[in-house]
Length: 456
Image (cartoon, rainbow, N blue to C red; front, top):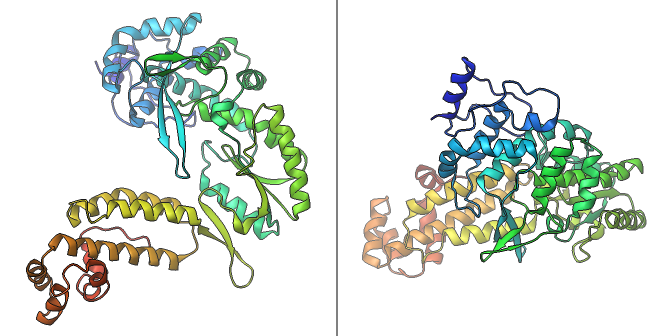
């Protein structure tokens, strides 16, 4: 049974997705599940849990979960399998939620490599628990988010990393050239449950919702078939984690505002901008005390009071243009990561054709460009484009391999006999040859034709 169809049968008219609540996206299409049967007709205002399990809210939550895709949790149920499961089991789950007897399933541990080394641990909830968390988020976020500091940008509707970078640039342009760059050690893994629930209880007074959130915090993590209990942390992977992180860290934001500081926070990345190192040291001392009150630990190796020109923030760094204007550039580490990724995709030992490599580049380059388009360094983007085309030309020469094949293919793309002979005569010098004759034989237009995206 189609979910929307079932809903329409009950109400007798199409259901309109509400905008402006949580992070659900309306209009994703028709969904399959059994959520609609026996649902209350209105959201009501009697308590938050009633709003969470209301039909319209659950439909919006399901659309978001389905659109986000994601893998199965410890129960092994994929999105498609969960659809079938909810057709019969949703009334029971909803009743358990309303009576306070629902117990979330453990998280499935996933470790992913971090760009700077080490691994980041994710906790993947089951699809059902992602659905319930998303439904909670859609009700709680409109209530809680407006209470957050205007200097907080991470995981908030209508705010993004670009806004944080632009605000930081504004502070630097005003003359605040020293940054207190604070990094928290394993923040999401070290959130104290008691402290978090205390801060959350000051914002909402629905005990049923608070109890459900506490159970999500305390749901164990399954490792090699064994469930490990959790006494701290809110692992990344569930829809609620970012909101809960902002609830906890908002206390620091408010204290910084009370003291009149200029700062920008994106999730657990917090940069405070001051005019002198002495002022920065005082601010850092105060921040240590604030974080200690929240039972959070500052990462001493990554935290510093330093010039803004030597630090990166959300993948960007700042530089001084002629005339004293502060401009944005892609941080060196982000450039290094980009080059490593492109080297892997364009490696000459992959055995893939130029068209296949171009297809992979089309999946990566536009997203990278979209995030770093704020950079005011067109020359750097042109250099990266030239470097990429150089690698692609060398890749093509390697695929042609022997001199006779190289000569024949070069003649096909317009090389003169002399040009083709010069390249074919040094057939195994792929990198050297790609800088000479092939610059003219395979120009920018050639790569545009096969669909290689440009950064500049």
